Image (cartoon, rainbow, N blue to C red; front, side, top):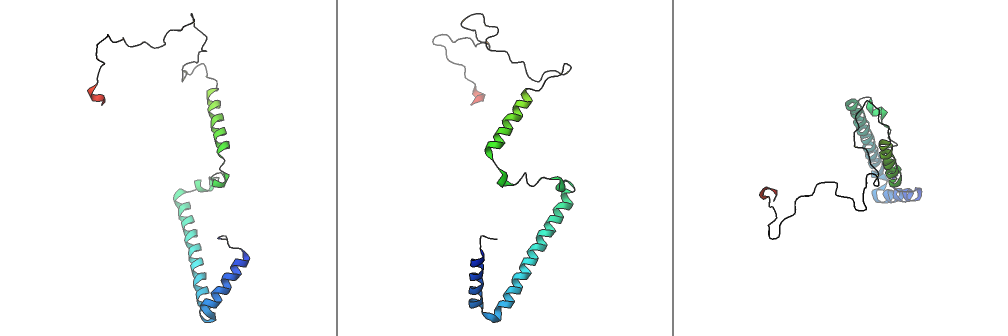
Length: 138
């Protein structure tokens, strides 16, 4: 409750009695009660309005899962990494086309100690030749 313990609450009540006096204290207590009731009524109305707009899906939400006190970055990263591994190791059915090319081990297909480039290189410029310049790229 706002970080106030019992002793502090008693001290605040005594200060209120001294400052406000016994004549005005009941009036301010009644105003505080009306304020608390009004806030409670507004919160209930907002909850009901949200329930009307969202519908039955609101009851299906696991609010404990969305609690920021449950936030553990190590667990979240671990779950995200394991989810990716599950997707990688899913077997591909024979009828469906593969979504990604097959991974080839690095040592497979090597014929010499120095493997050639896997993509074709652009022709080298002759000495003194200027590099191509694209006006639309800048």
